[in-house]
Image (cartoon, rainbow, N blue to C red):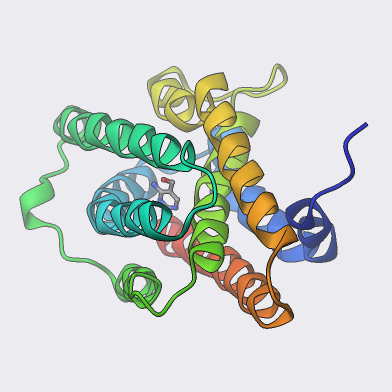
Length: 219
Ligand code: HMH
């Protein structure tokens, strides 16, 4: 068996906040079918704005990979992530019109603005590739774990929300998250203790922002 990576060790160490982010009441309410559809619509509009801010962040990680990576296949992983985001933005437009959510008239809530500002703080050239890839992995993992939970056999997810859960809960997205995790672990293995500290703190900040984002969506 492979030795456990740094990321797996950190998820165990911080499992309370990790569980808070991936088993949030908002997600549990999708899974048991009790979700308030106004909460879902709020989430949809706010997440569209988040994803728009997420694109330049993923681009910044790709740029760092081109400059700093010790493995030239990293770039292809981020490029596929950007291609998926292109599809995702189209999906948000289609899905929001289905629910009567007018994207052009949505203002970001403070929690969303704070999260987007945090992403911006990770985009500068002063932020190490290792720290940035740790954040990217954690951001994607929370959605993958949360929505995959809503697709499990015992779940009672409403049919009209199944497509949303599939978007992040599908096997291909799970594979993408494992690719991100492998890159993060490879970098963390060679990181200085200073970088390790920053990456772990960044992981915690991501998990906290994700909990706040679900809280905001739930209203
Ligand atoms: C808030 N976190 C949030 N939105 C997303 N779409 C993702 C993570 C995954 O892309």
